[in-house]
Length: 285
Image (tube, rainbow, N blue to C red; front, side):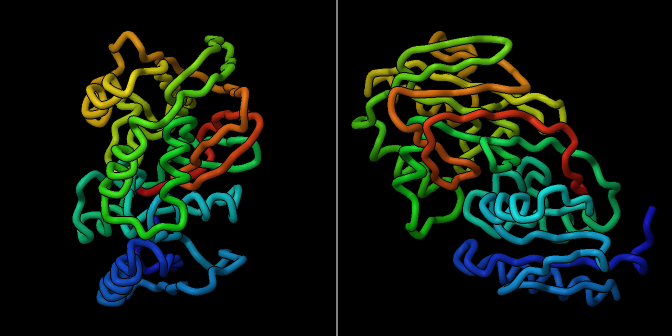
């Protein structure tokens, strides 16, 4: 294993993430690394194009920051660590649970890199997931707005949209299953949690070479309100209106433009071609 003296860590901070909490977290990391005499450089306003001098990359921000990184630096081979500095932090939770900063830093400095899968949706990469339909509507409503910590902003917007949203018609095709009809949501997950705490794909694994597909049929507003807490807790896979399967590749089309989020960022497209890329990145966790 690489010694701490051999390490040279690039710390990439998103100054806008978490209303400034990412900056504070990055500064705390730098202080701890300096105390341990570990070489490091913090990048806040401008990130480097070349990481050839570094042994590790620490990313301080939320899921959006991480998605920005993997799309700006595709094929990155250096081991990564994501530190909690955003609002949702679902990938952080997936890898580190409720670790304190000191506990996570100990893991980041001493654990061996482990491979994780990433997904590709059309021409963009993601680690956590893609949410189509109702989730896309929620992401659209949150775009450009200041977000509260955790799932608060997501939950407030869900409650605003849950009665008025009109389910869309989709054609969904994969080797395992083909479906068509009106659906409330279509979620393609590599991670288990989205929206800062909604366990939409509770059985997903980010290292199994598969995507978990969660599809909810069209529901009445009353049914949506009834089952929202069930979905939030990840207790929904057995419900009759839920379709759950795993696949390596899937395509989705709709009668209208598809509204979707990728790692929380809002997009629209006529068609989505989504696939898994096994063991594409490594993380220390």
